[in-house]
Amino acid sequence: MTAPSCLHDYFVRSAQRAPRAPAVIEPGGGAISYGELDALSDRLRDRLAALGVTRGDRVGLYMRKSIDTLAVIFGALKAGAAYVPVDPGAPAARGAYIMSNCAVKVVVIEAEYEANFRSEIEKLGPVPGMFVIDGGAAGMGASTALDSADAKHKAASVKTVEAEPGDLAYILYTSGSTGRPKGVMLSHENAMSFVDWCSETFEPQADDRFSSHAPFHFDLSILDIYVCMKHGATLVLISESLGKDAPRLAQTIADERITIWYSAPSILSLLAQFGDLPKRDYAMLRQVLFAGEVFPVKHLRALCELWPRPRYFNLYGPTETNVCTYYEVPTPIPVDRTKPYPIGYTCSHLRSRVVDDRGLDVPGESEGELCIAGRGVMQGYWSLPEQTAKGFHVDSSGTRWYRTGDIVTEAADGCYTYLGRRDRMVKRRGYRVELGEIEAGFYRHARIKEAAVIAFPDEEAGVSIYAFLSCHDVKHPSLIEIKRFCAENLPLYMIPDKFLWLETLPKTSTDKIDYQRLKVMR
Amino acid sequence: MSDAVSEKIKDYLMREFLPGENPDELTTTTPLITGGILDSIAALKLVIFLEEEYGVAFEAHEVNRENLDTIARIVQLLIAKKPAVAQ
Image (tube, rainbow over all chains, first blue to last red; front, side):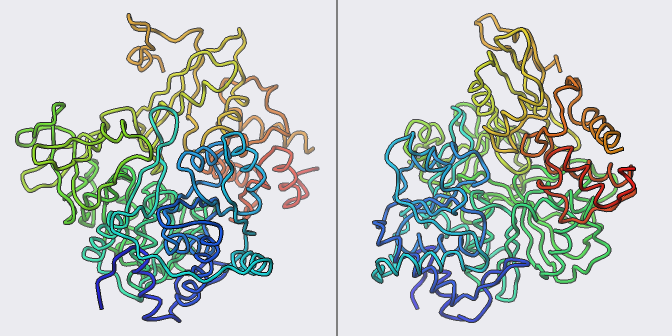
């Protein structure tokens, strides 16, 4: 048998090997086997092809996480397209911007989002094709929509596209410094090299049950979906509301006998505090992986005490490289430890170095910016050649090093410790938040004159975001009004924790907002 | 009196999540979750407050937008759980 040549090959081979094995479970909803998911995604491939999708196109996903969504993902990949998932809970204008920005050929959308999305995207130019699915359990929404489309005009069966390693597999949009999200382009090779590294490191088996906690527009989902499917294991979908509800989630992890858990640390902290973990049986749980932000040691220690059995891994990496370093946390954690754990060692499919402002290697264990090269590194940002060029440092041998923007130190044994961000990007609840994007959001409010957003370290929450604002009128908008405005214009995780109104914001000699002075004004 | 219950919840929300806000701005129909005032952690804190204050218990599935989005709905849910609250 030849080696798999593209990302969906992993799934297709598992489906051929064990078609009756359970592929995906929606707790309290339905389940689908590998064979059924393969067949459903074949039908979606054919429908997408009938709607004009060909190799190299993009297919938008405007859906909540479900079995249907996974079928659409594999359908899009099989049709040769890259999928572009957006958060259906975020303002429709944001989703429409993303779909329009990367010119998707077709958007697969849940019925309840269609009207809002359509009215937003119509403002931006040509409207892409739409395939509308009713939200329903266990793949019923997609198959009903396919049946009714086939009844009108049957989609011809087409061959699954064998993608080339350099073809795009998905585009994930992250917070952008200009106030607009930017699309990180990841190829089949990028994803496969990461998935293979995971196989080597975590040694998953067909009887593993993976959590799918992260939403599909978040890069943690890549490990969940593809590592699980490559090994013929079962993926347990955690919906957005279940994912935030610590007591119910704790019960689900036990009931669904999850063996490999992966999420941002924030929900694990909540599970340790509110999950009532000693009451339940977690004998099956063997690995707990976390990534996306620093795990406060206090909460990690509590979790390790409540769940003493699994191995714990701290994974680190921006969306542009996916995981690039990892560290296995030795347990139990000493009671006097307060220092966060290192981000660890470079993954075997990547190379790393630490450089100064000029791109030169720093000596010994000095601080510097972590740069990453290798098969896992993104191709660039969608239609942003300048930002792509800025994101890389090209050395004399022509190697492209992705500049993570993270300041680290490297110990003599190659273990990295994270110190902070080079620019103004912070992590909040596992999400990357560009403070400039929040500011840009405020400027859309008619009455706001100036906005400056600053993140302060916070012992409980990791980071606390303050908005300093001034307005055109004497009386500023009420706190309730401004929070509502934020809720309508920004994803929830970007809404600042505190709002401070000033008559005017302090300025530097060059008339720029003086952030240093604001920092001491809170 | 359910008015007294509303006032008590309002005081709590003002104190915990809207410090410095003009109390007149927060009415019984102001959207709390969809309006960005309560995030998931804040909603959990509110539920703990209600459980302690009124001696009621919330099921996990009740902690959602439908039940907690306005003071009026919170009062309704409390009364449904414990009619004596309205006395």
